[in-house]
Image (cartoon, rainbow, N blue to C red; front, side, top):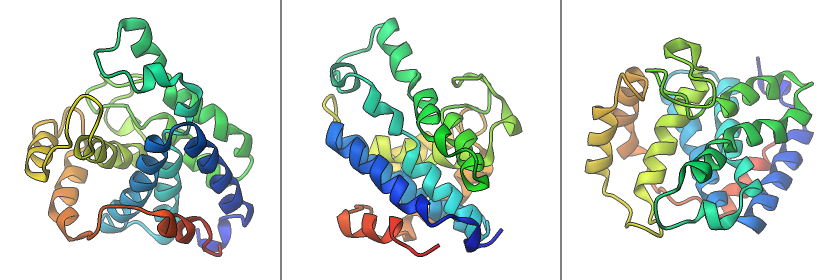
Length: 213
């Protein structure tokens, strides 16, 4: 598929969803911007075509959109979540899917929806929400999981400081083959240091979601 297979209204729709997320939970909004950009870069390093890179980018942008439906007291809780709170948090990928399901008539979003739903599935079947294993997990979901984990570990949280790259890289290696797709981890580790500036600002967002399809 080529660029022309992405409808013009996609950009306005995604921008509106992200602006709604920003109004509710700014830190998740910026996280989604970074994951969208990193997913596109990893997809490019994998040799995926431009359409597939755009699927990866928009899947990353929308992967946590469902968190705007979760109470901030749970989302930003500094301590350990209790089992009921954990269930609520783990439902965010399903909520994200439900939000973007409204666009499912278009083939572009038909690829984004399963990628978003599955972005916390693990190769060993211990992920959620569907306990998928190995190649049952959509490729773009596996892409998002790697870059999502990197970004989550690298950023400051209410309960800890962001971790340096060498520690995050070691964790990705340690969990390669169980949590993460080992080939994607290999590509990420070989290329990530060359990706340049890690902060995604408002100007970058404008560039991402105002490109002409």
